[in-house]
Image (cartoon, rainbow, N blue to C red; front, side, top):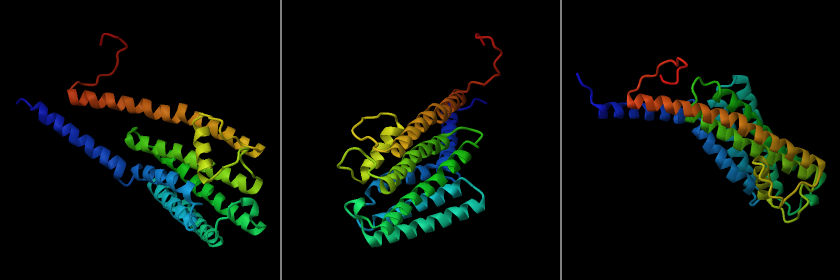
Length: 262
């Protein structure tokens, strides 16, 4: 009996959509992690613009950590550690919000300075928990899918956020971080992603050895991540597309014989 080619294509398309839906929205999907990471990119620079900003930022980052650790299926002990760190981060953010944001970090008392530094460092810790968890789980998959792409993009964005928090920490304990003036909360994130992508506009430059060292490390990590992790994901995703195209057209996949004519 002859088969309907249109029906075959519809069946294949339905299978593909079901797979994509499971990859991105299922219990192992990383689309929600990518969305929360993008939300963190938006939230972190504005946490100093209003009094409750640190609390909002800590809650968003805490949600990112808990969702990431759950999706990554890490050991229950690691999830408990993540929960404790998130609670500490929210507590520190609440204390920082209670004291208010000074116009100049230099005007902070010693106690408030270290409180602010601890709050900023807590951002680094919670984000640092997410990065290895994402990579470990995403690249344990036997097949590279859009789920893996979402995970790799989330990990790349997390690198920029981690160094954003590190730059702000250095500014508090060994500032000023920048040679230039006119710096605000967004400047650190802007400088971080410009450094991560090795664009290097040069409108802002690190003033201390600690800042320059961190900038060098971030630039190197950004390049290594792009030429290894992202390249690996893209190349493998390309092969999957070939397999999908052959399935749709009805071609059979035969083992290579080494003869170009086959």
